Length: 183
Image 1 (cartoon, helix red, strand yellow):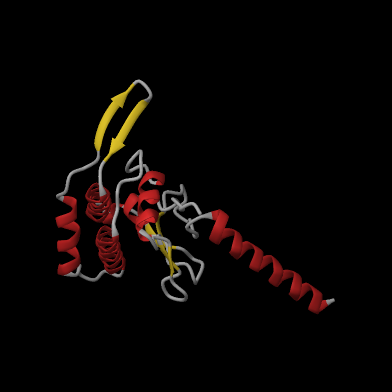
Image 2 (cartoon, helix red, strand yellow):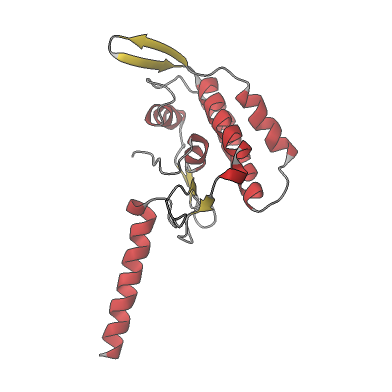
C-alpha cells in the first residue's frame, strides 16, 4: 500500500495517515515499518530510518497535535498550548543530513529527523495560514485537509483519484437512478 501525497504540505500529508477520522478511522501508520516507508515516500529520507514502537507513538502524538492546531486555526479558535509545545519541541530537532553523491542527493536521519521535518512543515504552514486557502475535502467521510492552490480557489476534494472520483460516480448513479424513475 502506498501513501497519498495530495495535500500540498508535508505536515498535512502526514495528518492524512489517519484516514476517515469521523467515521471508521483507518490507521496507515500501524507499525514502525509503516512510518519508515512513509518517510521515504514523502522524501524526508532516502532510506527507511530505524523506527521502534516508542518512535511511532511519538510521531502519532505529533500528528494529532498538528491536526488539532490546523483544525482549530481553520475554525478561528486559539491553538491549544500543549499541541503548540509538541510542535515547537519537535521542530527544534535536527533536519535530515544531506549528502551529495555522484548518484544524487541522499537524505538520511532517524525518527527524530522525520518528526523535525513534519513539525517544521507544520510551523511554516501555520505561520502562513492567513495567506493560504486551507480546506477539508468535500467528501463527507474524508477528513483530509489540503492547500487549495487552484487558480479559481475552488478545489473541493483532497484528490481526484480517491475522493473526487467517488463523488462523481455517486452523482452519476444518482442522475441515472432519477432518470430511470422518470421514464
